[in-house]
Image (cartoon, rainbow, N blue to C red; front, side):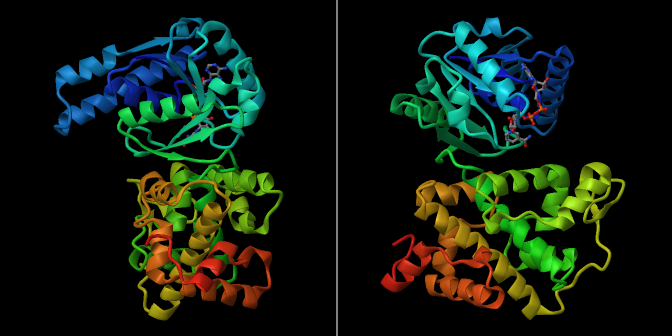
Length: 389
Ligand code: NAI
């Protein structure tokens, strides 16, 4: 199969590696020659490291490398079965590129976008044949993260959706089908992990370290919310929150935080600048100031439960609004962001009654719309039903 990938930055390079590893003929296109050179040498480094670790042999490395060609002209995509765009996140530039792609490829070539925040419908609308367009959203780093969200636009045909899903599954990925709504599944459902933790901090309930430690040791999350925001970059994480907030017509549930905005403005972006919520040592590890011991176990439990119930509420509402299926919602969080458990499964374990009670408790305390309980949870509680039977 011939696959074109446009944009040889972080995402395009990773997607090219995935497709080439599974045997596709990949053409990686970028309008910046330096980016192409960088992508090629970075793949060389990554594959050599895999050989050192014994996960790859030399023949396999050569096979993967020979499956990728590098070019700076979109015209070489002629004859592609699938093109995935991973260029700069800008609607006008993407629409212009989609028109150009369409002028070179055949009628039945699928044209996909890896966008995180733009609507697929708006990108598809640039095409003469918009039913061939959809979102194929990988996570960073693409070769390591199992999940791919597939997002049909209003215009996408059923045939294109199922063909794209089967290609991505052949590449060894877990597919979750998401509705074309802001943040798709993962970037929407993960908001409370950051937002509620920031709110807890802003209320003076606990410091970054204590909150991180509570979620790691009680919840089993691999990284605490503040460590994770520092890892992603406070500039990027803040913008995603702000974009989702605006896209949802300022629903208070997604309200961004001044704490993070100021960090971003100050240039305290996290790991990449050596300072964020934490300071970082020479080997880029966070320096824990007070080695937060969870001496107040009740407080740690309360913090964990408050963040968890907000995550569950978000997941339940996404199911209620048909954003994705129960299984895809749970897979998205365990395979896209490594959550220890699917959120709906977690809801069953904690008990639907517990979820409703916790949400109502928060609402009664704050009287803010942010804490409204999902109607789905309330109905399920009344009917004594669960997400999984
Ligand atoms: P990046 O900045 O690392 O790479 C973008 C590449 O596109 C650059 O090499 C640039 O030279 C090239 N480019 C820009 N305009 C072009 C054009 N008109 N024609 C050809 N090449 C062009 O960006 P990154 O992070 O790889 O993101 C790419 C896309 O993937 C964006 O839509 C982003 O929202 C999405 N995305 C990013 C994720 C991430 O964690 N970085 C995760 C999932 C999706």
